[in-house]
Image 1 (cartoon, helix red, strand yellow):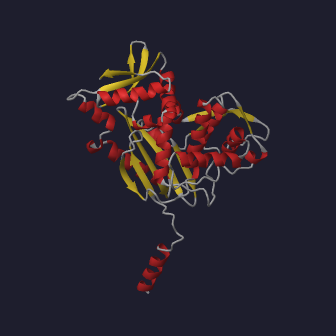
Image 2: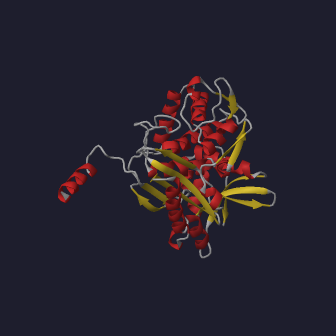
Image 3: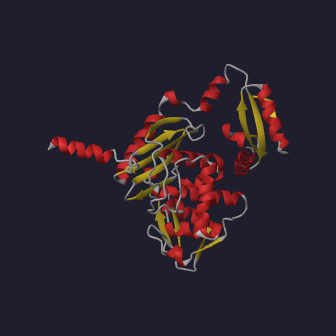
Length: 352
């Protein structure tokens, strides 16, 4: 009987159509793409509400292109109001602002808002999903296919822990000016206050948050960002049996690798190396407002794709916030600056 049970178990586990591994995780540096820990990282899973990271990515892109404004109205269609919870329960024909929609997607994980903003941007949910998959292809998400903007159960809505790590990392690098939106723990709309599902943010001050998710088929999930002493760490976890279990496991992993001296970020390595050898910096902007500096960095990395390989620092000089990245040789620094100038953008090479 024992042998029979073992054989049946072996056959079930190895059936080819059961390709979805519930437990999957990736932990690494979102700025340098260094991976410190991984398990089942490329196995396709149901991303649940982590799908909304792409919805938010597109919102931020539309805002930066001036196709959207934070004060624009987002009207709720009949289709939006019929979405399953979690949702705001806004009546058909009523509206909220894009600004409120961002909070609702991050904090409340509102599915009705996801449909409403998708229709606002693309006219229909179908058109918006096409945009989601186009972005997924451009970002190199090899195991991802989106079927909706919210992550409610759909057999075609699939991703992987590694793809969510890449997507979250790209959002962090391309849209740093919106990163503070993920730090909010609550928001109020129509007299009702909603609190974050990401309870780790309440217990540990290093967590900036990003997004949590849950559907029955995939379990409890999270994409979590932390910051300690200017060093970022991003952890993705799929498949918790409960929110508590998910939180405990991702916190254990984040705590383990945040404190690992072996995993010093590339930025910290650069600082240490600069003490013993000459380095060069390319200054790319100087603004009186740090928000303008961050927006310019985002603009540069979109206009010049090769700049994605370099981490932009920001330091204050007098009343100005200056952005720059570091280069090892003068010839390479001059060459990169020349490429930037070809796009009629400013830069200057200096000794670090």
